[in-house]
Length: 224
Image 1 (cartoon, rainbow, N blue to C red):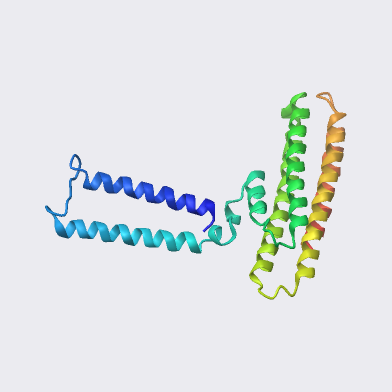
Image 2: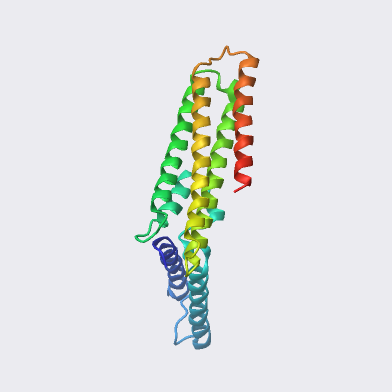
């Protein structure tokens, strides 16, 4: 049981203990062994059953097995924590994981720069550019999800006979991420040269270039 799952179990146990205190407290329900033996035993049994189910659920959940739950990964920090949980001592993917972490940090910084550039102008006019930045980030996140999935597949294979194939797949995804970061840099360069008086044609050209690049990259991703 990893630290995160263990923390959830501790919190749940504390909450259950608080409920028990309320049930057995003389100032509230005041159920005791002496005044209601059957109910007292039933409550104790319910506590044991609840704790047993909680232990089974937590220890067999995706989060307990892998240290994260892909369905719950929403932002850069979530993906960072998931990747860091795979940085085990003997992992053959150490360099790839570190590169993915660097890419996550890079896309976050680029998004911040984009927002700062747009705040200096009429941001409402450039809403489409913000959306484009989000699309680029989502694309990178999806590649990270595939990397996490592939590492999990490798970890579940006791023979590890396909290590080179798995590493090759992960490296292609990382290369795809590098491409999106390059395109994001181009977007930042174009936006930095724009202001709130930029023509619609200029905005359309910037959007078109980045959108076309995303389409090409998605095509590469689908072939992996």
